[in-house]
Amino acid sequence: MNGQGWAEIVLTLAVTVVLAWPLGLYMARVWQGQSTWLDPVLRPVERLIYAGCGVKPDKGQNWVAYAMSFLAFSIAGFVVLYLILRFQNLLPLNPQGFAGLSPDLSFNTAISFVTNTNWQAYVPEQTMSTFSQMAGLTSHNFLSASAGIAVAAALARAFAANRNENLGDFWVDLTRISLYILLPFSVVIAIAYVALGEPQSLMAGVTAHTLEGAKQTIALFPTASQEAIKQFGTNGGGVFNANSAHPFENPNAVTNLIEIVSMNVLGYACAFAFGRVVLARRDGRALVVVMALFVLAAASAIYAAETQPAPALAAAHADTGVNMEGKEVRFGAPSTAIWAAATTGASDGGVNAMHDSLMPLGGGVAMFMIQLGEIVPGGVGSGLYGMVVLALIAVFVAGLMVGRTPEYLGKKVEAREIKYAMLAVLILPLAILSFSAVAAVLPVALKGLANSGPHGLSEILYAYSSATGNNGSAFAGLSANTPWWNGTLGIAMLLGRFAYAIPVLAIAGSMAVKPKLGATAGTFPTDGPLFIGLLIGVILIMGGLQFFPALALGPIVEHFQALHAVAAR
Amino acid sequence: MASCRSLWIGGWRLGMLDLLYLAIGSGVLALFGLYALGLRRI
Image 1 (cartoon, each protein chain N blue to C red):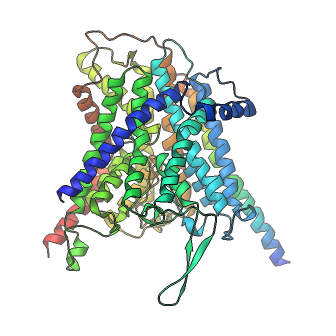
Image 2 (image 1 turned 180 degrees about the vertical axis):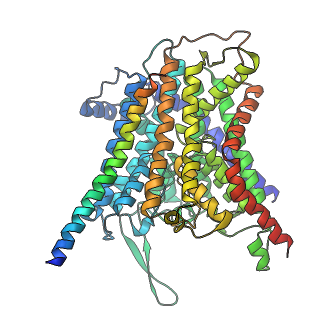
Image 3 (image 1 turned 30 degrees about the vertical axis):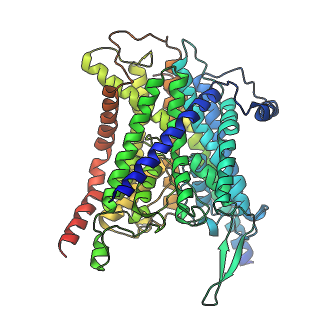
């Protein structure tokens, strides 16, 4: 550890939060249907889409209609993407001549991209045609991200509403968020990536002659454009198997910084936008503070862990100052640490180092960030609505302490909303721990593991945490392209996405019809340090209580084994 | 003849597997619709 490393972590986080503020203000305008500086170009396109799709933008939907639209859109997306992947050999733009994917892999991948997870049980450069990458996967990178942000926008409007069940229109939100937020920024970021050395090509690849005289095919894809929305939409699925550790996806320190910032900036911006829409800017900023503190703490813990002596390096009599196994030399430990915290806190899942090679506590912290519910700052949209759910639980706990009906942002929080909130948060331990418990004893699942003992359990736990949290990153060492893993991880992704979002929309529906109350002397302030501390406590206790026993059997026991191994030398 | 038969069976199984996976994915998503309707009763 050194001052430069700490400065890198703090500055990266600071740049992200500072850029999120103006982006959040702009996003609030998009959520509210207000004019933006892109209107002259995009408004005609928007109107054309509404006319072509028969959308009536002023009609609005209640929460059930909004949820049904979200589900219908997801079903259609799943079926179309499944067919594209399954029959990519019959479709154009397949210069590599790849075969169609197997049914179970098509199932897993289609769900993965529809749910904004981007878990990849395949080697992309050896599996996916250019058409599948562009028309299948990249398009869903936009649409699934827009759908998540749409739910957050509906929740914000619900808190702003006064006895009005109208949450807005899902199709309008989907269109506006894609057109005004994701597309223009992704274009700018993609051009920056091309300028910084990332390839953007429809060629299958180029052939190089190595110094030994062998021929080597170097795969090429429209990498820069995919990379832009991959991070900006917290998707995380790469066009290369090594993801952002690959020099084509992340060639240098500048692209690395842009990628870290872009994978978190929308998450923080959603919280700023929420505060703006609800007319409670300080409350929105309080959520941002909580998010940023978690990322800072996690990055610090991972950086500290990665600068402890690693047993394997000690055994090889190598330099044990930094655990460089699985890391890129051009990034080093600090960049890896802030990236790992940002990607696991954000449901992004892109990696610039192999998380399986992190020290046990480093990997454990990354896993814990996912298990907190992907709320710090979380996936685009999903991070905000997950955080608001926990904020409701926090004010409910505070209300119980003083015997007063809790309120949040001028809305009374009653039994119904807390039931919805608990249904949402309990889906995470239910899916993660149940699937992990079964996989830990089932031979068909264990066949895919490269490690046994605590590290093997960590691989299982990480896989189901990643899938349910819609993160998508993986501990290497798990061969997940089997019917068992493809099937169960697919179901876990669906549960993590929709069994969380549907109760959130129910909360929105319930809140929207309530009267908006003014603050009184007895109102618990939700914009100050006391609330920030309470919310952090609720998040930690919920995450700790639910997952600590499982973590104790995986990364924590492995940490003590590592200490013992180093001490024995 | 045997190879034609195995090809036909293979193709049939492939088609059934596709339908199965499509039904599981769409079915689970449709169940979330029923879940939403059920949540209204809370």
